[in-house]
Image (cartoon, rainbow, N blue to C red; front, side, top):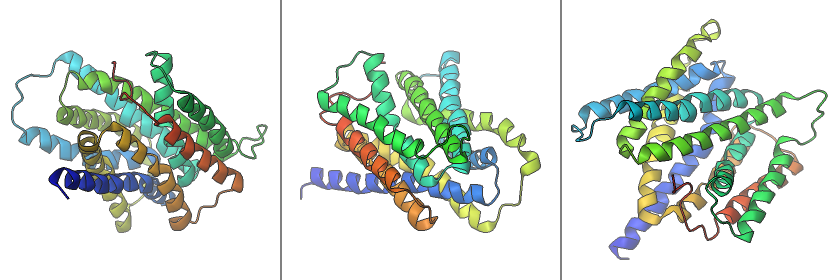
Length: 304
């Protein structure tokens, strides 16, 4: 095996570790929330750890030639708000009401929604298979989100599922703003400032839950460290590195593993149950994700 193939093999292995980490993140969040930790308090502690790491990165990094402008910081503030503060406002609350399995499946629709924005806004062409995949994704979501629902008495699960759709919209907005930011600011400083601003904006929400604060049991810190270090720092570093090593098409296909891991994790570790209709929905969503990625020639939103 030559050096190029070895690098590709290592990148694939690390990428699989990253997507498995993301899939299981929903399980850890569910465990923390089930222990009585308020949603935004959980997110603030998680990203507080991340922010401390990135503050250290910025302090230790060599002085950059190009100083960030006020416009740069405003864009970073906006991306941190949508990608961290508002995204987790929806996601953390959603997981209180719905299952970790449902949350993982619904958030995996991000590539589908982003692709739709890519087509409608940027007028990029799609193949017949991609269009069929988009239509199938909505069928799958219907089976997962709206199964056996009496709309006269909206269930808590439906509320959680709809909140997860809100999280999807926030992440797509984050992607749009982030793509603009990345043309102006290097990746390290972009990720660092997004995390710092996102965390600062989370703090007021955490204090609004002060009356609901409870003592954090020692075992929960394992989940907090896992979410912060493995899911919010290492996984993203691996993901960005893999983009350069093995390309966007292969990497985007790996992301399809996230809902599968989420479902398996929720079922095996949290004893969550799913109806046969939901399993059909899962299969349809995963299939649609693969179809949308077939022969994808450009990275999503590369025209911004």
